[in-house]
Image (cartoon, rainbow, N blue to C red; front, side):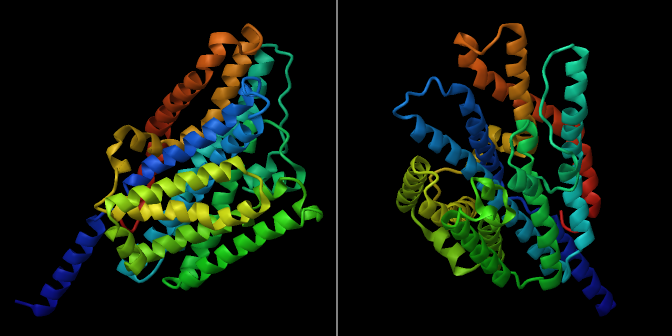
Length: 396
């Protein structure tokens, strides 16, 4: 027997075994749906201002807005975690990171549905209005910022007083900007991502301090800072840092794994209590800075605890329906405003304003319609692109 050939066969078998171990954090799918649902509720609140008493309206409005913001930051933190964890794993197995393949995978996940939504809005809506001969004009901004994934900075400079189905695409712009830069950073630094993660957290906190305490400056006026990518650097930084700890099996991971169920109850109760208080006082300058660290840290803790702890109070992965809804959450996010506006516009043409029972069932109908459309989109449109994306995966 040839010992050299045996060694090569053994190495090949080990590599195949490693590649067959799919990197999938099962609990994160349900977390994604929770994030989407919070954003959905935030966008629904606009239609129910009359139902909220004047005494409590500001607190309810702040809380629901904060819930949506939490949902968005949850998305960003999870995204940074997954991208970084997969990249570190790729480097562990192959010693290199293929930047172009990374960009191709991201493009195949984001661009097809993103392009369809732009076509529906910029071509589909005007054509439908013209065909039905309706006297209604939707306000659309220039398309160029959306084609270049720069819409968040367009909002930052000009505000966002136009069709909401376009406004929400600023989060996709932020994600894409992060992918482009972070992929390059991973390619250059490889395993040494910890220092960059801390730097992102620091810059994110400094930006929030600046935007909160120096609003008299033109660049920080009003709420425009909310759209700046720098505002979310701490989310991306902490998400990446958690990935580093997970892949390197740091003490933090071992500590969270060792926590008893009773203590975890108190931890999650404390998280919920903090989020309620932060929601009630949303807009407070100091809390806004503190949230730059606390919100992604809560998400990071949940990622580690849900994935590795054997003492969890519950496992999100056991909620099969929520897990699937999380898989289709990209479509749900992209379509939900179109569905909401379709219903409102249809009711307005048919009978006027939303009132009575129609207004009562409106959120349920909108959510169900959104999920159905997202399911169909995922199954018949997005999945072929996702299957093709495997061609550019080095690990399964």
